[in-house]
Image (cartoon, rainbow over all chains, first blue to last red; front, side, top):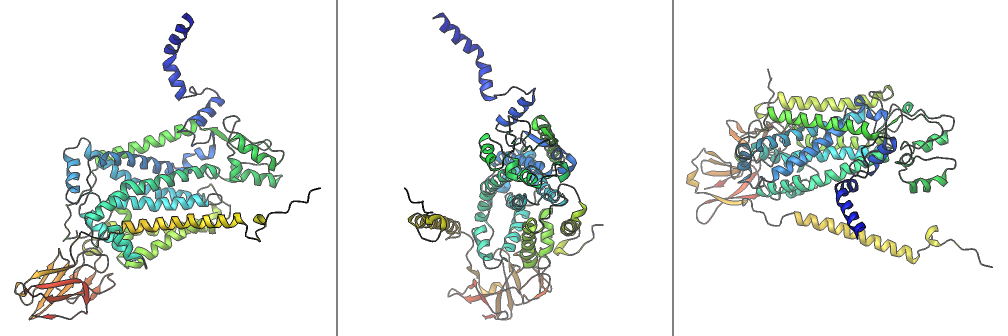
Length: 441
Length: 161
C-alpha cells in the first residue's frame, strides 16, 4: 500500500520532466551521437541530413537565396492568414477594407506592408535563386528535375503575386487584371476560354475578384507548398547541394566505386533496411546509417570526411538567414507603405497603367506585340528554361560560380537575365502617358 | 521428377493473360476516371450564367445625339457616332489588351500601351492588331436606339434615322 502511494507520488513529481522527455526525446546534444539523434528524431529537423557537406554551408556559394525565398513564403502565409480575418472579396467592400486596414485595424497597415513587400521580395529572391543555381551549374544531373520544379515554382510565385494585387480592388488591380487576362486571351486555341474561365464573366467584375481570391488564398498556396516540399525532398535525394568534384576527393583508382558513390540513391541510404537491401548487390561495401554512424555519406575506404553535423552548424546558419529575412521585411514595412491607388473606376484607366515592377518587362514587350510579347516569347523562354538541364548535361564546372567550363551557358543565361532587366528598367522609368518614351531626368 | 517451371507469359509479354488484361482494364478505368474528373471540374468552373452587363441594350432616342456628336459611353464601352442622319456604334475596348480607349481629336487613343486609331477605328499606330469593331445599331419599336455588342458589322455601315 505504501509502495503504491510512493510510486504515484514519484510519478507526479516527475510529471513535468516525463512530459518534456516524451516530446523531446533527446536532451540538448553534447556528443556526436546526441547531435545525430537530435536531427534524426525531431520532426522539424529531420528534413535535414544529420551531417552536411562543408561546401553547402558556405554563404558565398548559396547566398542563402533558396532559404530566403522559403522564409518569405512563410512570412506571406502568416501575414496572409491574418489579413484574411478582415478582408472581404467583394467589389463593393474590398477597397473599404483596405482603408480599414489603414485606419482602424490594429497593426493593419503594418501587416499589409509586410505582406506586400515580402511578396515583392519573394519574386526577386526566387528569381535570384534561379540565377544562383544556373551560374553555379547546379541544374546538371542528377538535379535536372529539381531545376524543372524550380522553374515551375517561379511561375507559381509570379501567378501568386498576380492574383494578389487584384484583391485591393484599386485602379492598379482592375486594369492590371484587364490587361493580364487579355494577354491570356492571345494564347492560341484556348486563349478566349482561359480568359472567360479566369474572369468567370466576359468583363472584369465581382466574379473575377472572387475567383482570384480563391486562387490566391487556397489553390495556389496549396500547389506552392506541395511543390516546395518536393523541391526540398529532392535536394536530399539528389545528394545535397551541388559541389565541385574535388570537394569529395574520392579514391580515383576504382571507377566502379566512384560510380556507386555518386549515385543519388546510395548517398542517402538512410535506414538500416535500405542499406541492407542495397548491400548484397555490391559486395565489400559499408554504408553509413544516419543516426548511428558518423556521416550520411556512403563510405568507401578512407575517404576524408568533409562534412559537419547539421546541429548546430546548419541550423544556426538557417536561423541567421531567417532573422535577416524577417528583419529586412520588418524594416522595409516600417518605412514604406504598400501602394494603394484610387478606387476602381471602370471608365478611366490610369495613364499610364503600370503593373508592379516585375511585370513591367512583360508590359514593355506587349507594347510591341501582344501575341509575341505576352504569349510567344514568354512561352519560348519558359520552355528553354525547362529544357536546359536535359540539353546541357556535361558534368564540368558544377558547384562553382562562373566556372570557366561553362562560359557559353553562363553567357547565354546572363544575356537572358540582362535583356529582361533592361526591359523592366525601360518599363519602369522610361514610359510615360500613353506608354510613350519619356526621360526620367 | 517435376517438369521445369515455364516462365509465365506475363513476364515474357507475348500472350494476353487474365492478369495482364485485368490490369490493363483497371488502368484504363482509373485513368479514364481521372480524365472525367478533370473535365467535370473544368465544366464546373466555367460559369453557365454570368451576372455582368447585358450585351444588348438601348441608349436613348436619336435626338439625344446631335449631328457631329462623338459620345463615348464608357460604362457600355461603346462610342456613339452621329453624322447627319447616320448613326453608328464603335467599340471603345482597345483590341490590344482591353483598356478603354479615349476619344481624341484624331480618333481614339489608348492610355495603356499607346495604340492609336482614326475616326473610324482603323489602327494608325501602336501595338493594336485590329481595328475597333463596329456594333449593330437598330431602332427599337419604342423609338430608342438599340446596340447589340454580340453582332459586329462592317466598318462604315451606318443606321439612317
